[in-house]
Length: 456
Ligand code: NAD
Image: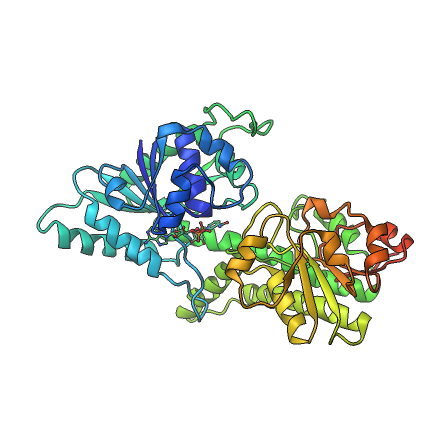
């Protein structure tokens, strides 16, 4: 099928590449000319495992352009995958979506197209996008009958495993109010739904994966599914962090508690890792949007709001732990290991490291940091944050009064802690993700801190 993707970020680029790999003809459009130039030169502007390898396999089926004219006319499916960042009151800022819809509407026409919202958008946006498309279409094609419909196809990929999540999803959700759109999207996704495509050698099909369920709904339900799923995951993390705070007080080991409850299949082990909490472009924004949407209908969402409060508290708790140990923060040097909101991505949006660094700087600390992939991006995106970027974790440790493990990159699990002990001013480690070998660190003479530290 002919596919246009509008917005070539984490979602658009992954979707476009995977669909081209499956055999569709894909043109990805982005309004950022520098991004388009890099993509045309075969570079990947984001860090995402396996993306470059898969792009290289797509040949001419995957093209990049700055012009809607090269993508929309003749496309059977047009995906909107532009950003929907949080606005000041929690509701998402929809200006990119509105601009994209106007540009698409202008170019729709001679054959049926389904315009699909892949961006995470407030419930009801499908109707709104439809009206924007219609307005633009009427303006540019007065008197012509429309040949398009709007659908919703929420995205569930996780940065860091985006390709695998797209090729081997748990489910595909498609919302539309007309059967033709649903049929078109079924045809598009058929190789994934039936798992009939040849798996790339570097990303084999998970053993035992059968047909992928398709959840076909009306527009509003698909839009709500996305928010409800993200809010549930966010509150699972906040739940274990809340239990972690109590575990800390009563001397229980939160890792054992998580295992003990997670093995109950009704609960499940995933998303029960206590620590600094969530970050990234989705959970914070989407929980805020859910609360904002509910309030438009006169509803409160106390569970989702509490999950947000607990998540914010974890970042304060990290600073309090350091204060409790060092007594005075002014003039101290604190080293942060990891800047991205989680490992295997270069995404810094709502990353706990940024909040923690700001809070420490406010209290008069000097902050040093290292990240395996995101230091250049950090320097470009946060020029105002006075933090020294170091070439290695060892440089961060040099002269530090405490190290904080913020992102659990695999390379931080086996650092030369004996060597670090010699070069740090005081051997204090705050394990923000509960992944370090506590016994070993204590044996080496470190003071080991965690947000939930109880247990023997
Ligand atoms: P992103 O910021 O990485 O990418 C958005 C891209 O759209 C940018 O390259 C930008 O230049 C481009 N753009 C903006 N306006 C445009 C326009 N009018 N025409 C063409 N291009 C335009 O965003 P993302 O992380 O890919 O997220 C996209 C959407 O998907 C958001 O709604 C987000 O909530 C949702 N989502 C993201 C993830 C994730 O993990 N990143 C997961 C699920 C859903």
